[in-house]
Image: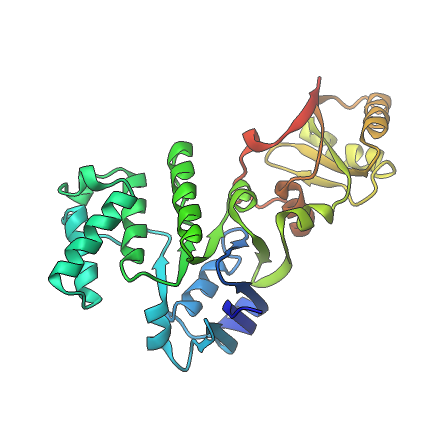
Length: 330
């Protein structure tokens, strides 16, 4: 077995009585994209900060490429790159000046620093804006530049903490492409995200965390398989019908029925009998005189998995509704 990119064993981080991390154990192979998925406050950034030597754990053992994070933080910093939630670039310097400054901080010679700066600007398609002050950059350009700064030292492992938050769909897709290219070149990546479609699209392995605890992990397919079979969703015309609707369809479901309050949707796992169960649900709603604006039968998505794990959907976990393949019935 190849050396692990990183590993965390029984890691905990306490802030007074608050358990930001509560005995989390996980690891990732080299050359993979490991995704840490969860709502705000789940503990994702806390774990990244500890792995990146910006914070120390209350207890537990962490290693990056076999190097103990607490015992040898200087060595770990030579191996990693970090792009945090907010672009850490100087807006009064040009894009070129930002990267050149980082290169000199890595003790590269002037010639090497200029060469590395030019290479990164080209790879991230920022060469046309290299001479412009960063304050004139769009949000997506700033995120790309921040990512470029984390690549100056040619890290073996890259930590990306919610790198696409706030970006428009086109820029997100561009950044996804860059991330895939980095992995092809041999970089291991730990990606944190609130976007379920992002985890589904990029991750080789996903760990779901909530309130400091690891609650599930596996590949996207493995997590979806936990729900088993088809899922039927219907949007209630009246939120006040929630309790009656759930009661009516509970006997039809193969697993626990859940409710998504932001969308007024009832989610019903129905195993491998989607078509017949769909008819049963329509009859049950009609009998109870409950109006559903939409009715959808589809295969489980990470959205459904997350909802089943958390219990109620966190309002700050984003989903891409357009990415779902469903068969809608009026």
